[in-house]
Structures are given as structure tokens and as C-alpha cells.
Length: 185
Length: 237
Image 1 (cartoon, rainbow over the protein chains, first blue to last red):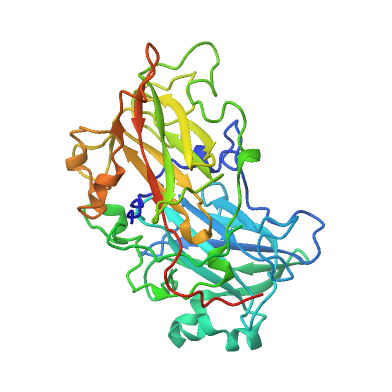
Image 2 (tube, each protein chain N blue to C red; image 1 turned 135 degrees about the vertical axis):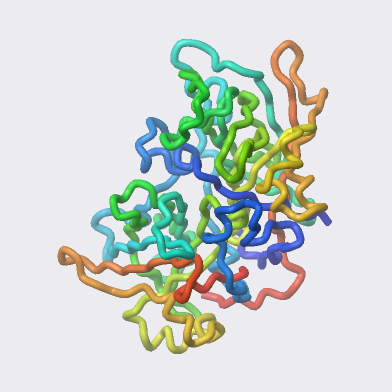
């Protein structure tokens, strides 16, 4: 039995390695924040900020999304389901993903798995994003039910309409009264 | 895509979320306990980036950014295998790498260290493991550089690596160090990994991997989370 290689921080200089085009370096990257392209049926935008223990914006976080397609399938043909965005290029320090709402399966509410990396985080953390307009499904979701009631709101992205489009807002609080629930998965 | 259940994160191998000697963990590491999550399809699947995501020169950082000559510094080859905890090779999985140049300077716009950029070195690349889980990339040995964590703080020579493995749960971002580096004993990031585990982050010099008249060779094997021994309790779609 071999032991796992320890994690180390992504550090402050990941941009040209992991998100070169987003950060305007003149070479390639494997993926960006556009999980679903323009014209995709039911395309939504998910935006959020990452905040530290003083409530200050974290401008050097790297956020990854992993999700099912709109039918609840993972890795389905034509839908990679994976996206990546740094928080260092948006003037308001946001990450911005273009995607579709994932389908639900097996009694769970729809959700996105989020992986969070940053300078100051030696081991990445995982969280989940649920949708505020899925109240009934959220109420029946076993993972949400495993979270203390007063902390569940940290996992719910709030729906709004922006420029005629559906957008969900999801801030990630690393610490503090609204500390986001992170999962050991 | 592999839907086998994934073993748990081994917290005896990974750094804690708050490690005060590394000062930026203090306001950024979550303070509340992580909530256990039984693995379902979401956790046991993951993005697939294989050979099609890598171009010819991506695995050779000594060539992938040349403008008018070769990059400066000590040419090295880094090779190893990506395995799971049971020793099974992790095949066709993407490794993304980035690092400072020989002078200890990153191309990154916010790196203000007063050391020269190298017009012929970018310091970023990619490679994919083969059927034996083996990978290889050529690069320049990165230099040490100062950082603001504490007075006279210097990062040891290191290369950043990002891996996916077979699922989103096996995702790993880590750093590879070099044997005999005196800065390791002073580095709060390296020392953040538990004693008995952190040594796995140090590559091994190998004369067998070293290429005659060309470059020194280092071996760095990487172990990702493997399959769980407990039954799969995940939902089926």
C-alpha cells in the first residue's frame, strides 16, 4: 500500500500555468469558465467571490466546477462538465462560469461540485453549490440534510435576473460567521 | 471514466488547513470541521484530459517558449509514475506543471522579485501519463526565490504539479522539491505536510535517468487516491 502524495498550495503564480488565456498570457490552457457554450439550451451564469476571514476579497483563488449535464449525466458525450476560473481578472474579483443547471438524479437536488485552491490553502477544499429555486428538491436532499441547518444557506446560490438572463450568485467564505460548508470527500 | 468508489483523503499525509507558520493560511483556511460526504457519481467521476490535450512541445519546457535561443540554467529531465495507493498505474491522465526560471523568477505579472526573466523560458507545460502511468518532462532547474512570509524567507527550488487522476476526488495540486536543498528545513509550505509524509515531495536524483552529455535526471513518483475498500454507497443515475 503506497501512501498519498501530500498536497501543497497552488501558490500565487498559478495563472500562467493553469489559466493562461484567462490571464492574457500568450499560450494555451485546457479549459476556461465556459462549461456550456453560447446557444446551449437553458444556459445560465454562475458568479461569485471568494472572501477571507476579514471579509476581504481574495483575488488569487482558483475555482473549479464539476457537474452533470442537464439530464444528470456525468461525462456525457458533448458536455465536459468541467470548468476553471481564477478570481484575478474580473474587476470585481468574481469568478464567472457559463453553464447549464445540472440535472438531478437519485433523489438528490441538482448541485455543482466546487474545488477551491489558493495561496494560503495547503490542501484544496471541496464544496457544493445548490440552487435557490429548487426549494423542494433541496429540502429532500440527503447531503444538505447532513449539514447543520444554520449553515445550509452557505451552499445555496441565489437566483437573480441580469440583463434578461438567469444568473446565480454564490460567494465562498473561507472563514467567519458565514463560513462556507466544506466537505471531506 | 471510472466509476469505482474512491478512497478517503489521508489526512496523515496532507497538510492541515491552517498552519500558522505559513501566515496566509491563518485568514484563508476554513476553521470549521469538514463535513463527511459519502461518495456518489459526482465524486467518483471526473474530467478527462488525455493525449488530445497535449501538443508536441508541451512536455519540453526547454523548447516550448524559445524566441532566440535556449533558456539559461541547468537542463533537467523529470520522470516518474503516477500510481494509486494500491500501486495501480493511473493511465492517460494530464499533469500540468509550472515553475520559476533558473534565476528564481516567475513569468507571472505580480512576481516582483528582482531577478531576470528569461526570454526563452516560460516555465509552464503539460504532459500525460502512458499505459504504465509514467510521465516525463524536460525543463530547467528552477531557482530559489524570496517571499514575504517572514524575514528572509526563501522558497526552496520547486516545480508545481496539478493532476486529475480518475475522479474529481483524486484531484491533487502539489510541489516537487529537490534532494539536499537546505531551504527545505526552513520552508513552512514544505513543513506544512506532516512529518513522515513530506519526504514524499522530494524527488530523487538518478544517474540512470540522467542523459549523457545532455541533462541531469530526477525521479518523482506521485500517489493519488485510489479505490475504496468500503462498498460503494453512491446513488445510481
